[in-house]
Image (tube, rainbow, N blue to C red):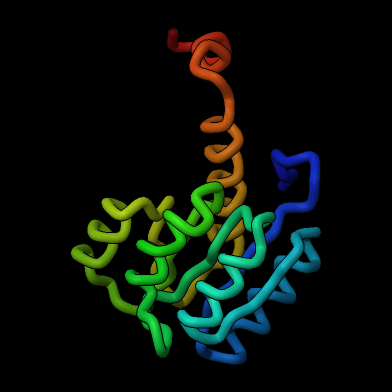
Length: 145
């Protein structure tokens, strides 16, 4: 899949499980993404405050110190340019609905299908680029208009 950005997209992977975090990091590095990692919510928020180049936050719902839903809520203000994709081992529709209401782009269930995750990341990046366009460019680009 090709990235819709001219520069290398930056992902923040927030996952407390070392193996999962390493797997995701290596997967996206081989796909050409820039990757930073956090193993808890506090680290994620600190990184989001410092890194103004973040495009995507891959966020586990259940991370220590500051939970994923709270991280999502704060990231929307700290790094509004970053799309957030939640990952959860629970198939709880209420968590997914709440996350989407708070501004998450999507909520994926673990175990993750890496192809689906990559497709979701690409879609989120495309959505972010679309939102950056002025309203009149959106009208011109929209074939339904």
